[in-house]
Every structure is written in C-alpha cells, then in structure tokens.
Amino acid sequence: MKRVTVLALLLASVAAMAPPAFAQLPGETRPPRSYDPVADMQYNAQHWAPSEKVREIQQALRDQGYYNGSLDGVLTPEFRRAIRDFQRAKGLPPTTRLDAATIAALGLPAAGAASPASSSSFGAAPGPSRSSEVQAP
Image 1 (cartoon, rainbow, N blue to C red):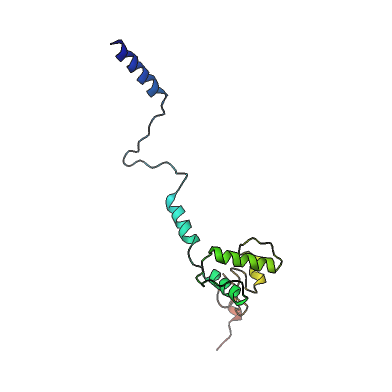
Image 2 (cartoon, helix red, strand yellow; image 1 turned 180 degrees about the horizontal axis):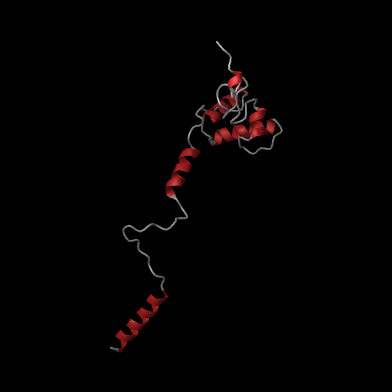
C-alpha cells in the first residue's frame, strides 16, 4: 500500500509540473499561428510559376548566346548560370538575380515600366485628364 501512495504522489507532482493542455472547443477561435503552410505552398507555387518577363529575358540571353535552355519563363539553375555569365561579361556584379542593372544591360525596359511606343504610363488614366483637352469630332 505504501508503494501505491508513493507512486500516486510521484504522478501528482509530475502532473503539476507539466504545462496544461489547451483544447479548442467548438466555436472558439484559434490562436494565431506562426507558420502558415498554405501561404508557404502558395509562395512555392508562385516562385516556380512561369513568368512572361523571365521568358522575355531568356529570349534576350539566347539571342546574345548566353542561354541555350528552353524558353519556359522559369528561373532554373541553367538560366541563373546564363544570367551570371552575362553579368560577368558586362562587368556587373555576378548576383544571378534579375536586377535593374542586368535588365538595362540586356536592353530591355525595366519591370513595370511602360514600353517606349506607349504614350501612357502604367497606372495613368486612359485618355485626357481634363475636359478642355477633348477635341471636337
């Protein structure tokens, strides 16, 4: 009987030191999470998703003889090597990133910039901004 009492006291003392378990009851809100697996999956999907701008840069690097891979718009290791080789040849820091200096050295417009043939800029309202600028037919 003495063993049972000692064992019960030992279990009670261990249980008192353990942190309490918090169960979520129906209807209760969840505590904020520090890791969001859905956002992580979306980031990975977007990170490896093809991009039209990357495809354009792949074509420019292929035209200049630095890239021989497929024009798929994905930042593959082969494409990053081509960027690095191009940057070294042009005297740019070999970052293997598509920074503004690399895009300018390729002769392409910067990301988000309007094309030279376009008369309006990105985000500008289409057409004249004042009614006095409208010409009669």
